[in-house]
Amino acid sequence: MLPRFTPRNLIAAVLAAAAMIPGIAVQQELQLDYRMNEHIEQVPAGPQGRAMLETTVFQPNGPGPFPLIIINHGKDPGRPSLQQRDRFYHMATVFVKRGYAVMVPMRQGFANSTGRYRDHGCDMKANGYAQAEDIAATLAYARQQRWVDPSRIVVAGQSYGGLATIALGTRHQPGVRGLINFAGGLRDDSDRCAWRTALVSAFSEYGARATLPSLWMYGQNDSLFGPELAQRMHAAFEGSGGRARLVEFAAFKRDAHGMLASRDGEKVWLDETMRFLKGIGMPTEVIHEVPAPPSPARTDYARVDDVEAVPYLSENGRRAYQEYLTKMTPRAFAVAPSGAWTWAEEGEDPDGRALATCTAKSSEPCRLYSVDDYVVWTGDIDAAEKASMTAAVAAPPASAADAGAAPSTSIGSNKATN
Image (cartoon, rainbow, N blue to C red; front, side, top):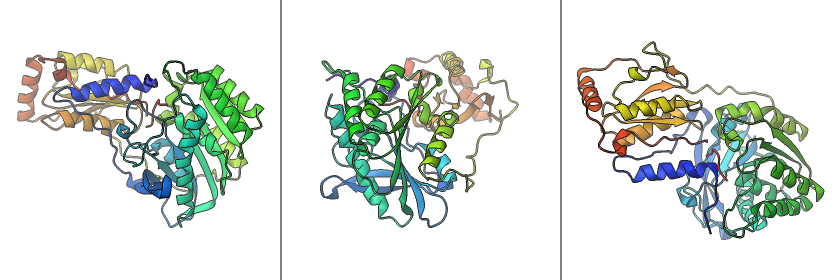
């Protein structure tokens, strides 16, 4: 079977290749956010509850009980165990402000969850049902927690997680009032797999057995599930008896499939989602303040597009910075006296990702040079740094590995993914 294709395949391939080059390492794990009481819980799943799902939890301050949203992830290319922990940080922030607890379970075999990833190939119905079992296990666990209001729950999912979320709705789920499908589906480019037809058939069966209302959101420039396929899947679902409102939104950046993981995606999904939640009796009003994460201060060191002003960079590094200027915001560029550099684009915490990746491959500490469309570099270079900078610029890199890290261009966990 050939690997399933997603836009993130190309990103993963670049990162994987970079990780094999001496001196380059990629660090993607994100720190817990105390502002939203983020923590990790182990949720039992599978036969006799022997598997443990690595589950990110966000909560407002206080004991609860809180209404709950469970957000389900997609699938990256390659081994599921190598996939990083998904957080859906931007979406989680919106819901914590509205008094919700948020759970993001990594299903069996993904990230640090135990158990075995179950792959049913081109049988999309079976794939959805298998993944839905872990969501059901998360629901069972959540209903037992004192901080969860078991009568006010909504379940959402992106890409493969969206397919699994709609599959979950074929069974009665106490306390669950509705489902949200963000670009749901699964693509399989193996030989003799008519995956589009298989998806339409799967949604037709899910619609015939649906027990809950759902909201579906697909973008015009979704590279996996474009408008024609989204309409076919929705028509099959409703034609079999399912209740779903399809929202087809305009082109979003380079690929609408990564909309949910983008900081700017809130402008697309928020109003429609709140309208849906209000219709099923779930809270929609902001009742908590969540302080914005600290951001580096703008400086007057240089214009952001002044490539020659960036310290430490070799000629290859300057070409990389020129390329960085074409990337989407949020973005960040980090440098080190050793001549190391890296940039991160879109997704969660590009500042932290750029620094972590740069630091992992540098013998000296890295600092942010620019963020979004402005410079944050202060220009305070000491004598030792000046010597390192002179050496780094004067000596051309011996190989591509010395030119800097492969760009960390994740479109979110979240991200364009299956």
